[in-house]
Length: 227
Image (cartoon, rainbow, N blue to C red; front, side):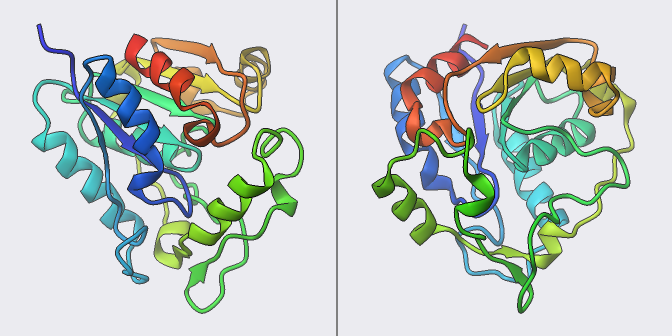
């Protein structure tokens, strides 16, 4: 039986090629992985909205054979969860890397200052510590130089979840700069209500910072192949 397709969604400021090393590793393992190109993240469309990005992910799901695994990184964990809400019968599994679903009515990713209609990469100061500990200076410079300002309509988009069948979709939370124990504690304390209601939740540790597709692509690919 052919393995299900793996759809890869990058977080803020990233475009689809950020997954190149992970895709290569997965293909060596006989897996079919497809990075999803998001409106406003690589195409110059600064007027893109959260709905536009959801539409791109849903189009990739609809075009995939079988029931694909949808992988979201960082803020795009919310995007992957929106896809599960919109296509609960078509998504085979959701994998969340270093991020969490936003609850209904929440703002998608309004984390940093918006200037002239976009939210630029804020520099490394907000990510000092565990987030960026495994990025050397060259990797930091490359990531920052390629960072794509996020359209305001994406960052400040309001999340709307409507189908409780999303809780039936199996979820794997990959824990990079935090531990599975910390994530379980946050769930128990009520900080992650969407994950608290997920009926099938597995937590997987990875020894990396916030961008394991850059710093630990082989290990991340092994995790994705296993799920």
